Amino acid sequence: MDINSALTIFSAFAQETRLVVFRKLVKAGPQGMPAGEISSALAIPHNTLSFHLGHLKRAGIIKATKRGRSIIYSADFEQVNALILFLLQDCCSPQVNGDEALQNCVVGALPELLAALSATQNSGA
Image (cartoon, rainbow, N blue to C red; front, side):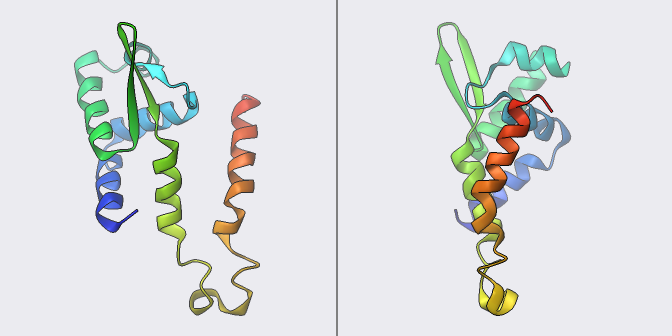
């Protein structure tokens, strides 16, 4: 991910409704949710939600898939991972953290962190 892509995503997240919608889609997992369910769950009017979903989609952080007569929205987890890696790409460099950089590397711990988050989500916590 380059800096301009990251800035586009952060710009999309810099609005409360869009951030709430995105977090709802992350919680929904890869299967996503239809727009009507998102609207009902978050008490956001359809036209307002449509505007914000469009903004998130243009930022490249969510996907929209047509399924029958519905459009299913889901978080783009590849983009989420790319954003996290972009933010942390230098955290393990010896110039930043000294010789113990690789032992304490947050990026190296990401797979375990993501597994723990997934387990928490699946347990209903």
